[in-house]
Length: 143
Image 1: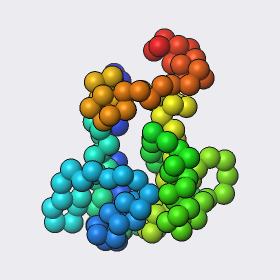
Image 2 (image 1 turned 180 degrees about the vertical axis):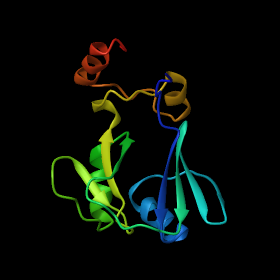
Image 3 (image 1 turned 90 degrees about the horizontal axis):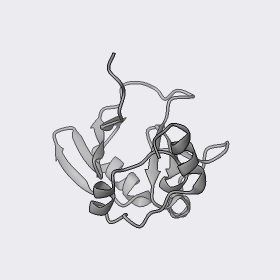
Image 4 (image 1 turned 135 degrees about the vertical axis):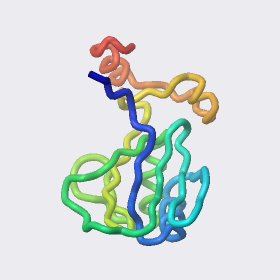
């Protein structure tokens, strides 16, 4: 059977591409890969988010996605400055204008790892992993 090896992209339904780019741009540094018609693509190194205009379903309680950042505390401050409410619970969770649930994780603290050449290309080659993240990788035979 084929093995899952990662996520290439996430597609989010939003009400307006312009409003979504403005919303996410208040919290994250964005690099627009491209835009056409009712879709826009935001680069995340070797991955991307596709913002698709036209929300067709209501939000649900548990569906969410996790974004990995280089500085979780800077994200927390930017979210607060943007006036975006923190969701209850542990960690850094919030919802966008269309009620998409976002969880933010710090690259240094999780087992998710980018290849050295990708980190270098993103200007993040000096972003160290925590001892706990290294231990999680070693426990899986990956570090």
